[in-house]
Length: 239
Image (cartoon, rainbow, N blue to C red; front, top):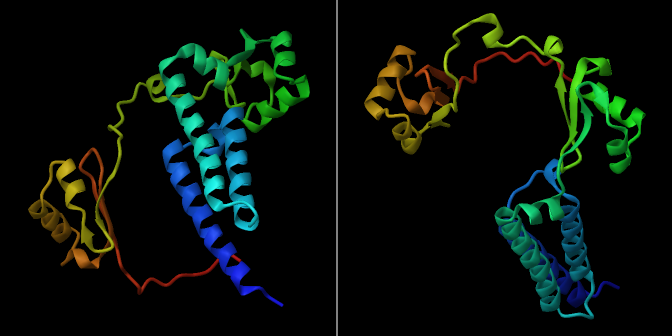
């Protein structure tokens, strides 16, 4: 027999738990999973475990779980502020980059320090596109555990400077119409007005912004339009 009173309590606790987690994540800031330090990971797991227990443990008042999560988030935030201001604290809590290769030579003692063997290093090289370790000049393990590689000069990809070209400037592309709505703030940010926009639309044979799915303008004032054209014949090639 389902105890609806208990079920209702679990539903309420679950909602409170989710809201609390959302608030805590906003307070603690944004970081991609790949950028999490060991301390970040431990705090995240701990808060998640407390939130999960909060939903089903009816013997303890939900308020105490919220307090526990708030303490974790508060300490985490305090440490984050300290690490911003102190280089020593940053190294202590987040770690420091470690050289694994220098001048084309593997630093064995640093490999042992990070609990890596040669096979691990070779695997990381292959995953980064270097199938011959002799092509590398330096390898650095970052504080988040990822390895950055610097190839030797003669093994680096050709860049624009090597080809002595003068490419156009690149920058963020401003979305000035989205789903038929003119984004006035974005338009103003690139130094344009609606009169300019309407003129550009006319050049593209577009009568109204309502016909536009997306319109963009880049740093070189290149204007592009994607219409709400439902007449496009889509040929499915993915299964």
